[in-house]
Amino acid sequence: MPIGQRLSSVSPRYIRHPPAASGWNADGDALDSGTAHIVHNNLSHLSAQNARLIGHQRGPGWIGQLVSLYGPFAGIVDVAPDPGADVYGTHPWAQPTNALCLGPWPLSFTRLQTSPPGFVPRRVRVVVEVQKGTTATTTLYVMTALVLGSGTPLQTSPLVRSYTSVSATGANQQKQLHFDLTVEAPVRPSELWRSRPSGTDAAADTLVAPCSVWVGWTSDDAVNRLDAVWSVSAFELAD
Amino acid sequence: MPTPVSQAPTAFSLAAVRTAQPVVSGGLARWADEVSFLVGHNVHNAGCAFIHPRGSGRTSLVGLTYSVWVPYARSSGAQVVRVGVELHPGEDDEAQTINVTLPTGAAWVDAGGLDGSVSFYNPPPGRTRGEEHVGYVDVSGVTVGDLALAFQVTTTPAGSKGAGVRAVRVTEVPLAQLAVDSAEPGWDAAATRPGRLVIDGGASSPRGVQRLFHCLDAARSDWRKHLVIADIESADANVYGVTPHWSREAATYGAIDWGYGLSTLGTSPQDPRWYLQVRSIRPGVDTAYRFRVRYRTSNGTTCGVRLIAQGGSVSGGTFTGAGAATTQTLSLAGTSGAWAWDALDVTLPSDGTDGLVQVSFDAKGPGAGQLLSLACLGLVENEP
Image (tube, rainbow over the protein chains, first blue to last red):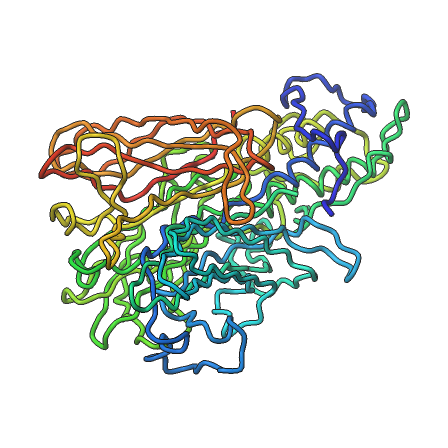
């Protein structure tokens, strides 16, 4: 659930107030509760709405793999596919023709959760525009994962992941596949990033939780290669 | 004293402010905490560019000198930007220098070799982890609200063999503390402790209620979503179908050639569309953005690019529009072979479910044998 109550749950909005330096609040004056309500509402509303866009990319276009999901691991020297693993473990995340990484960006923890208790990051939506071609009995797989840092899902434990597949139906299918990635557990900041040119006024480094979105795709239409990935969009969702 | 910056908003119930009762200092302290989160932690993500290898028949990235642009508008609190550059895998002797040209007012804190001083070898193929080089940039001198700025990352191959840049990532770094300084939207948290007199303070004072209003409004009007769709710009002047750039030849509005090529059966590609969620500051009011384009025309003919936007929802693998799509046209003056920026103030619709908007682009080229080339299409929020 989002943090910070707003004046309206039906149509929450920002309420403009007089500009700073207008001199309307003299020193020593008491603040009225109406003004306080409005400012609290505005703060909560901006916290909910200031959700960042993570990345927007052109997809690779036409895709397709040879023989099986394991073929693309040819040439990868520091990891081998695990035939017993799920689609994440058998996907060649290292190949630029099969995956891309958006981020890292520092997480903001705008949702409060009670089980397990703690602050959790904004939800992330990924929309992947694809085409599933007409080649019979073939399938297009699209998978997403949210990871701390920028390592591939082969090397890091994803915070959350999701995948789907589209099977051939005999007609071209243009799809907007969307994945809402919701982290269900608190995330601990893990990296120190430089945040000031010097540390004379305040700390020069900030401990952040950098996160990346991985999007992977593969198709077993190795003959005609009529499946395609056109675009990838990823953004934080407002609460 | 500096104010600690929270990585999360503060919980608050409006019932704690009782109507017709005096406002207690605890409420003001919550304002200070919340402002520090909004302007100190929840800063801009300018975006990233992922550079795909060129398709068959196109000019290869290997050995090509090219740039990648990422438009950037500073948020009022940010002091430092992190620039990450990932390299394509390459062969043993493939190397290049990477030179990041900074926006006006910015300076390196730690270039990490991204100032052109280091020749980076491409990582060997077959590794699962990419090789990313990171630099940190002091942006405290960058004007907040300047929407004409961008980072330019230029790769120059050594001995004409570098495989080039695979990805560029630009993001502001959250602060650990807000300094008590009128030059940044800091707030002295001690001023809201119990027993302190509520003072006016003015907008530039780090203490006083009006300073809080100033900081709060900065989190509205100086906070901007960045949508960046970026590829490369180079001096390559090859014609349609060979050029490494996104392009349009025909002198009518139509599909941009995004470099997909045709399928093995000769099928034309689909026009890509992208999705974002716009802010709902005032429900029902369209959101203002600045539409920026980096382009080149091969001759002096005026060309154009159009932004097509539609609010809607996506469910079950299908986008459904809420209303009619709007088309906004940016006319591009002929540049006769030079790369240039142009921009247009546009709006994105507010009628999508939870603010969801689909955007796409088409373009008008200079005509047969000539080319409009595109290196970057960017949308930067411009809340008035």
